[in-house]
Image 1 (cartoon, helix red, strand yellow):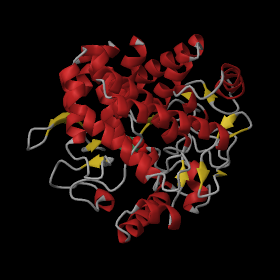
Image 2 (cartoon, helix red, strand yellow; image 1 turned 180 degrees about the horizontal axis):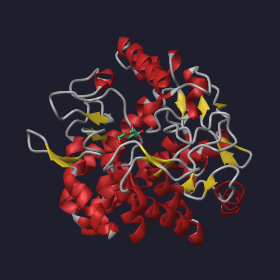
Image 3 (tube, rainbow, N blue to C red; image 1 turned 45 degrees about the vertical axis):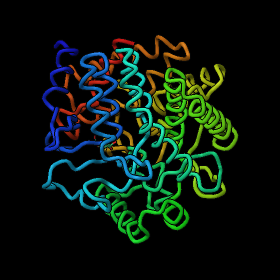
Image 4 (spheres, protein in one colour; image 1 turned 180 degrees about the vertical axis):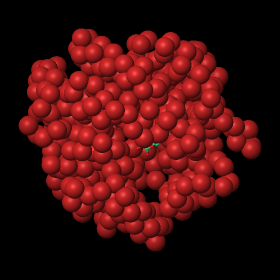
Length: 397
Ligand code: GLC
């Protein structure tokens, strides 16, 4: 199998056009037939090298539904007829009421790196900036310098056990019961107009490690973009917030050598061991010594995260670990990509290459599937799922 060609063809096959001419890529035609926020950023990262014009269109399509307060909805329902019970995420017109990890600046920078197209940066910049201002101003109402999510789906890891305490559910909860709980959460947040402050204080308030680490990395990219455009004030905004979030994450979210997501006003740690421990590598949050220890005790440890087929999203030691449980243990490609990037940055070349190679093998054996049982390597979930195309970026970086 020529994996580059297969990836290119998959992105092409999943490409769609809206009635008003926006072009985007669906993560999976049968299971996920709409546009998703972080998925579109992943698509743009891969397309930046393959077809930069399509990468630009993907981002512009995403930003075309930016809300007046700057928030980017995590889903855009381009098709008029909803085929799945996604209406539970409505609340705004034609889009969802929640957001997702803010990979936009990273994706825009990849496009710039591939094209050196300053006009593109200039056009997207005010929208990008507004989306980060929203997160910093609206999702941190008490100036804790940690951004909060108001629904597990905002992490992109829908039923991750990291959120069990905040969701008030037991660790053996089924996939459907969990989904029902999340629907209830959206329903109750609808009653307060999705006001982040009320949603957080009364219902669900998590300072999530991956979300904040991804934000740190993206603020760095936003600063780079601002520098190219000579936008001094914006550059200052991005650097200051990057530094202050970085500092606060180390100060309040670190214990036992790793980062833990936290709940509520007091930053109580949510002590469930997930791949969230690795995401801070992507944002340079560990010292080189700490990173080495993390790789030794977790990345390379078959009793916690490492399996023959890849990295578990939840440690095998957790009571909530389920090898086929969606985000409660299986291997996913986006986590592999984030970890790969982090390992490379810290100089763990051998470990990164192993991760890339097992990712390629999973695709060669199963095609582009959604997630995999770490104990058997068996594929589950959506077919023709685009996240596997991130291996193209892994092969080129
Ligand atoms: C699943 C994933 C989420 C992703 C979406 C579309 O819900 O958990 O992260 O954005 O599918 O691919």
